[in-house]
Image 1: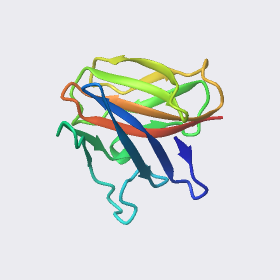
Image 2 (image 1 turned 135 degrees about the vertical axis):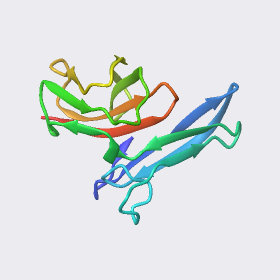
Image 3 (image 1 turned 90 degrees about the vertical axis):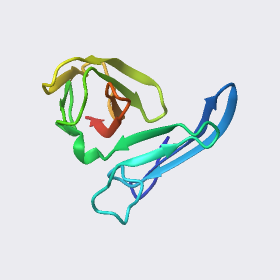
Image 4 (image 1 turned 30 degrees about the vertical axis):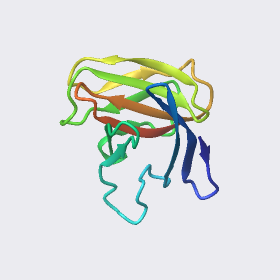
Length: 140
C-alpha cells in the first residue's frame, strides 16, 4: 500500500482463492472513497471474479476514529448498523498487522496504541454479518 502525492491510496497485490492467485488493485481518494466524484462515498462492493463472492465495505463516514492524528489511545465510535461481535485490526501502510482483537458490545471503544510506532495506519472492523468498515488513522 502506498500513499500517492495527492493523498490517494493505492494497494496492489494478490488474493488467493482455492489455491489460485488473482491480482488485486484498489485505489481510493484521501477520504477512503473509491469514487472520488461521489461526495457521499457510498458502500463499495468488492466482487471476486473467480469465485463470485462479494464483500461490502462501508464508507469511512460511518466509522469515526479519533483523535486523528492521535498518540497513545485510539477511540472508535460504533455505528448503529454494526452487528456484534466486531473484529478489529490495525495495520500499517505496508500491510503489517499491529493490533487485532474483538469488541463485543454496542458501546464505543478505545484501543491502547502506546506500543504503536509513529506513522499512518488502517483500522478495519468486520461485523458478525461480514460487513467491513475501514478508516485511516495517524499516530503522531
